[in-house]
Length: 109
Image 1 (tube, helix red, strand yellow):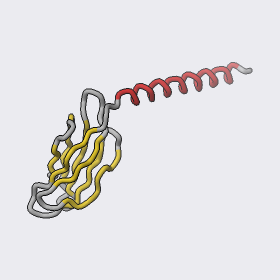
Image 2 (cartoon, one colour):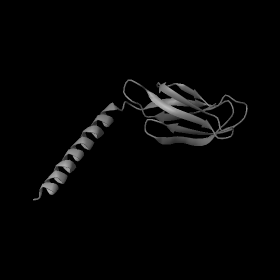
Image 3 (cartoon, helix red, strand yellow):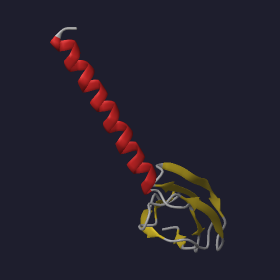
Image 4 (cartoon, one colour):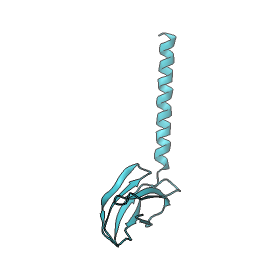
């Protein structure tokens, strides 16, 4: 083997090991999922989108009736809780909620 080939082999092995270690560290940092309520306290129905910022996914995209709420589940980071963005698709207003706990109420902005 040439020195260049050995060097590339070593770099690839070290990179693979680091990726495996960082992936395990991230997986270990997730906590148990939590259930929260998305509350529409306005007097009109609102089309709402909720993004789970921990798992980076859309967990809700529907119309919530005036004065009602919808339950969603969020991913958490151990010891920090959940993190979600609630967007009123009618007005364009959005609010980010950090350190969200189980059974918390997130109000549509």
